Length: 267
Image (cartoon, rainbow, N blue to C red):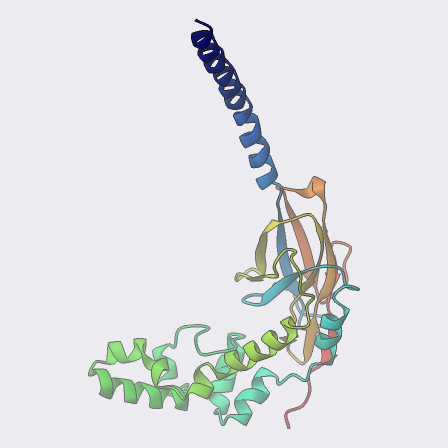
């Protein structure tokens, strides 16, 4: 009889413990979900002037980085950014034998590569023809046997240094700069590219201090603009979208002003 009571007592105790665990489980899950939601969003908006009299415009298709840590903690990175030797877009393409027509086509769309926008027929033949596009189109038409297909795949027959060489050159610069950022178990470096209106979003940000930077100076006409500013993500900013306006001109609403330097002359 005592043996049966012991078993029943044991089962009762196990049942009570199980119920207690199940009762606490929703609290644990809820706490974990609240912890997982402790991230913020930073809405970046970049607007620039190419001259004192030019209107403000959104800085489209430019990449920005959010590096964990303060400016002091990222001193090596900021110094490397300030002292880098940069080849501008025009200088790169001139050095690699691009025609003036191709350089103007890139400049017209503020493009860094031929993939920036579609190549229209007027740039393949006629008075606005770009020699490199005309040559690549002829090769593509011979290869595919169709003018329509040749237009779609025109860029595949451009020389690599003119097709994506500038992108690869800049990527090498970025990779070298990012090695100067402090390594640690903290938040990873995030990067975003602005849309056509100059807007981009950094998401899933833990509270703390970050450095907003474009790492590689942005070409604005005859100058190079570099942004390196501290951004604070505070606990009471979590799960909100805070517009962060940057520009190359001072204004009461601008939170980060670029440092501009004259673009170097091509060698």
